[in-house]
Length: 402
Image 1: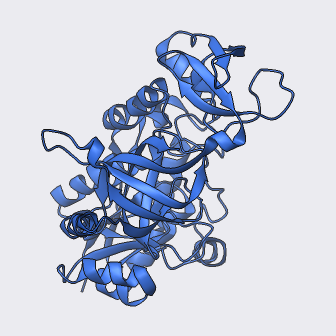
Image 2: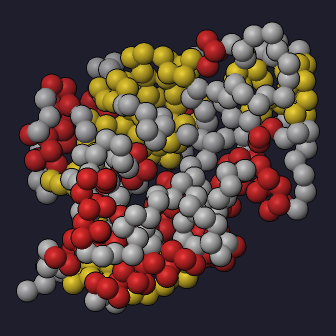
């Protein structure tokens, strides 16, 4: 008897292919689906840095044919353009650092694709991400110290709550980009690769099953900017060159000239375009004044950040209740936080940012106060908070706290 109907998101890569194979072996009734995105229309085959090219679609279809499961291509170009590319461009134009992979997961894979699956009689979707989904109470029992105490408190009022936790392969863990998986989405998602090692397990399985992409290289960078030149992409999309402006120091003294503030990122040291007597770093990118500010490495350090647009993977009501209780005692929740994809999670406390509350009762902002100062926190970055190896949720940094 089938364990249920699963729509597998097929990218054409080895991870999603092995995902489909494993689920079929486990007794699920599987079908494969590849989302055709804008990059599929723009690039025929942009090489190893791309994904969702026409060649990837062909690989996904070949794997589904070998596994004997149905395959379809879903045209989601309009939604991808609106929800991912447009946001990418406007975020850069505002001098912030976008993360289109997080937006693609939020709005496409675990948004539109999940909606499509449920509308067409599937019980869940599956992807080849390296993270794990389990019961929150079980994950709590695996922790210790403050993490266990926090997770026990979250699990007690929600008997059937689920938890998103890190993958066992530390080199491939993707929990950082999956924080938009709410409780509802976690209940409809399967991640069978979370307990596997990429090189030791996944590629071996693909080779044993004769899958066409067993040795296919991982996609890198942003799929719709395969050469990594974000500024030129935005220039081409806008149909005009970026405006030049001043490079200044912290006191406003002009050090040089740039050819587009969007070509710089906070923390950058190389390729600044000015001759300096000692190393200096980009400390601010201000697109309103079209200036790039340079400073010392110490100027990059911040004790914390303020973030908005929070999404909770842990039960939201329980998290907010714990935050309220902590605030009543003048405390914050002890967590670990990442501000970059592959960064080791750092000890921190999560606190309501009362100064940033919307007067009309809108979404509240939070402060992440780190135990040790962090380097190069940039507006737009995703901050993801954990209790032990369990994702609590994430938000978007709007301000570094010096």
